[in-house]
Structure formats: C-alpha cells, structure tokens
Image (tube, rainbow, N blue to C red; front, side, top):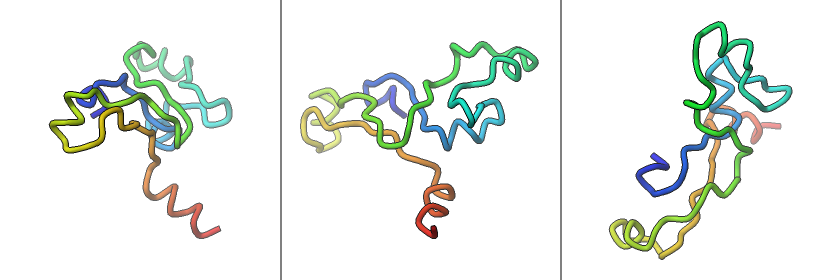
Length: 88
C-alpha cells in the first residue's frame, strides 16, 4: 500500500511481530529465523514504531485521492494490539 502512495514500504512493530520472524525484545527481524527460512531480510518492509511518519504523499497522488498535497503517511498498528492497550 505504501508504494502506491509513493513512499517506501514499512510496517509497525505489532504487524512485524505477527510474522513470527520479528524479535520483539530488540525490534528487529531475527537473522536466525530468517536464515533458517531462507528469507533475505532486505525483502521485508522496514519495521518502525506506530506513529512513525513514513513519508508524504506526492502532489499528484494527493490530487487523485482528494487529499491535501504532502499529506503524511503514518505507520498504524495491528487493531487487536491497539485495542488491548485501550483496556489497560
């Protein structure tokens, strides 16, 4: 989706954690798990904290979508994880 908005692929930690290849203690993909699975870490979207500005929508894309030029694209979070925080 981010590529269609003109920004680099990214995902937040909660979604990356669902891959079972993400080290939630260190907030990085596990080279050990990826190595066993034969997956190049460079193929995965960058994992960032929720709320991180990933980039800004181009003027052309913003016009096509009816959004303000330069609108920020921000990492969200997995709905169940975010809902769990709201219960605390």
